[in-house]
Amino acid sequence: FYRKKIMDKHELRIGNLVHNADSNTVMTVEELRYTHAMVKYIRSDTGKEHNSLVEYEFLNPVPLTEDQFLQLGFQEVDIYRDAITYQKGLYVVADNGWFMKSGGGHKFNILNKSIKSVHKLQNIYSELSE
Image 1 (cartoon, rainbow, N blue to C red):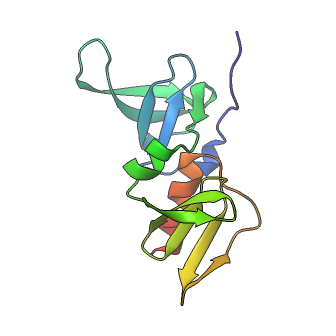
Image 2 (cartoon, helix red, strand yellow):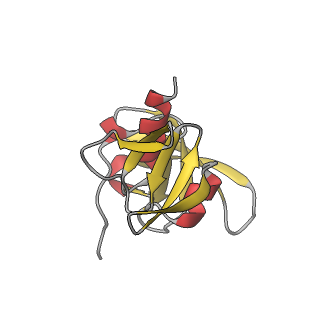
């Protein structure tokens, strides 16, 4: 069977959202171990929160979508260079993945590459907003 991109455990932080490779369930990283991550998720059969150890090879990045931007607390603000932009505080992310800082009516690109997954956006935002 086909597996998506395997997560690099060094990119993960506590609180990151990831997918389970087999069920596509979105999970929150609670603890990082040598070969596994402790994750929390809502079980589809019971609707209750569940914790589980999952090997890194079974975790995938969650792609950035409009729903993900909104769930992470970003608000849609405008269209900038043919991309929809979302803002949280001083930081603006375009739906094409470019991350910018807003100030004085201007947007400044602060990364040399685009962000395509939720955990990378969570990590960058966390680092820059400390």
